[in-house]
Length: 120
Image (tube, rainbow, N blue to C red; front, top):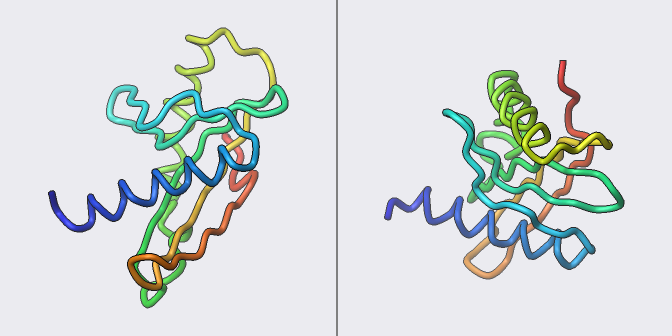
């Protein structure tokens, strides 16, 4: 497996563990709808949270969360609408980003950005 895919998978697993430790219930991981993928779908306090996980080895080219552009936001919005329709969820939703930077193999920094963006 390519190194960037391994890094991404490790980041998603760390993000899942991070959220679970904070009391979130993970409903889905790597949920796909059409050409869109949602890394994590979590639930807490009646809110469905759609989470994009970005993992980097350094911040040399910017913070990981800066890689979530308008195109990615639109994909997440598109997939999230299908998900909430399928679940018949009429409550609140939220879009979060979890940015992870590895300092070395066993040391990393996690930044959980709640309400990272709103659908248009």
